[in-house]
Length: 111
Length: 319
Image 1: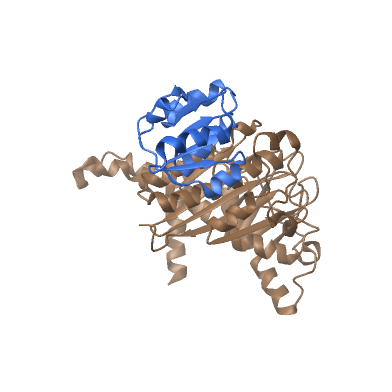
Image 2: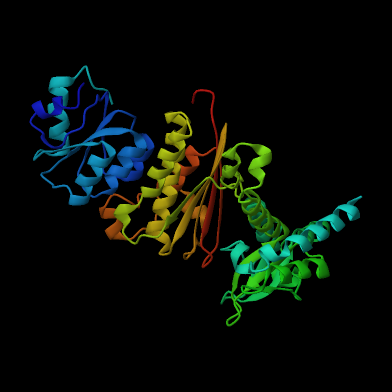
């Protein structure tokens, strides 16, 4: 699915970058994400500090959805623009956010 | 034959001496230098020498002051006599000949000639801390570098060669095998991963496949994060690149790992709480590294920093 389609699900877009995503992943432990996330993934997390961009760049994560109404650090937003990573946020918790994605995009996105 | 060549070199050195007589030891010594503490074992020295591919180590006390030197010959003797477990202080050479930073290149030459040793530690004049080392290779490279610059700047050459492309020669003289180097010196954990991201970019620019690069970048990220979280010191990432192979070394100058076996276990972590809140310190770092690397060596002991070397061969499916 196209990254911008996440906007239509009600997630607030903070940084827009073009691209497609084929996988989803949810976890807040960075080493777990590092070891397991596939390339072209949308990542659901509650971590908002700048290091998540490094994790995304290295694993090939294309978009991040920050859950529970948290806000991104200023540095995170800046870096994501530089590295071409899309950022979204939502008031929903991680489970609810993923449920929403799956309801609409069930066939287009894999674990 | 060899003697003849040596005489020619002596002649040459005499001729060109005015050009490099101003070079000081500090200009061409290797620094920082890998050292070993006198209470370590000969076995540890052997591992250090093997992984850094060096043939001798200055031995220092707690304060970093020069105490002796241990060389590959001492290791060979220890292997023959089965004394690898002995402490360094028993097996090292204690009468070390050293150089000072401000010694001139000719002083270094004289020492190599006079003593026939392969290397001379360089120490600080005041506190006798080891600040570098000079090997014959350092000496040769210093001369070559100086000579190649000299050579290329000689405009008369162009009459013979006809093209000025040769001007670029010194840039292409490969003096070090390190192709990527990154200094880890931030105190802010959220910046961790900068080095690994840079390395990823570097490897992609060298046309390695994304899949192969990802494996290397993940392992490097974890090693870098460890330096930031645990070492409380500065560190360095170095990478060596060959067509089918990448070697990454990450080392720090911090407090070291007390029990490597424990640290290798999944989920074991000594990370402080504030770090865990950020999603670090899950105790998966070392096992991620082990999983990604084809070969991994960790050297550490309390108070001696951590040295990690990882080897990556390009796998069949990583085109």
